Length: 355
Ligand code: ATP
Image (cartoon, rainbow, N blue to C red; front, side, top):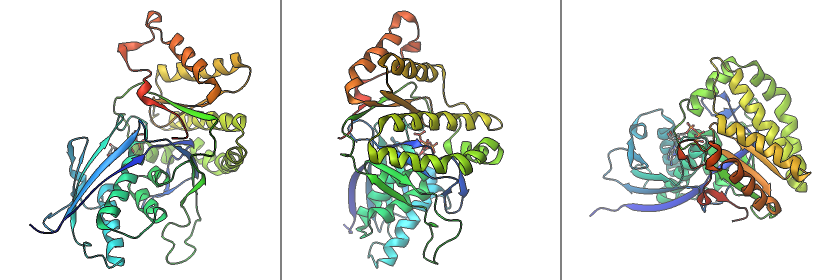
């Protein structure tokens, strides 16, 4: 039998609190604005990816949740880009496996393409596990740049805790600066803010009808609000969010998080034709958070929604019990809001930082 290599790795989801939506350079996958996220623990939401490398494999192949994705072997796709960049790195490192192809099986422990950042954990895990299988020396900062070429937000999932993806410069600082300074950097690690917890409320596990890639392209092309937001709102919010995280200022963190989620979804509505990622249950939960904070007499919880209807709630740990009671009261089956018996909340999706 000829030589081969196998590895299995896992990667976490990250949920943006200052949202990335839109590219200024599609070729390099550079964002129209910077973003900040929190990386969740891998207890409930994670991608697991197994890679088998062999000189016998004639092409790269990938199975996602048991179904083959033909894009892995199609030149120019975001999957193919990641395989190619990893092999380029392998060649640069003089790696003896550099010309081998990979067979990959990947599985998400949570709904795929439903607004829970599966592409982030998915592409981070792909870059990381391929690098391990080839035996590359490159560190997570380099792998983050490769993951970004698969899915922008994936660059943040190579780091734990609180992570910024910097906007970067309009021009390369040097010939080697292929990322134009647009890197993911850790702002604080996962142990930084033990008083904060995170809940993920699964509102719908259905695959979204407008993928993030195509949705953001339409937004960049048609939404004046997006143009304004990227130039005039996000830079100041990035700075304010950095300070809120550094100071563990939950009031500032929560308000910025909710405002940014709301503005992101406003840009989706401002897109032509409009994109609707939130549904009635998502909007009920938004109102519930505001009512909850009023009742508590302080900002205790903050919602954010990615490109999908599922809610992520950042909350002061001391308010967790009261929040779950409030959610349970709203969705008591008798009031008819628990449509189709959907899993509106599941203990399995309860995330608490630190891990
Ligand atoms: P989500 O909707 O889950 O939040 P997203 O907002 O990043 O993800 P898309 O950009 O539409 O949305 O990404 C979903 C796509 O990412 C999937 O259709 C699939 O092509 C890819 N993807 C998801 N998980 C994986 C994985 N584990 N490995 C490789 N690719 C993945």
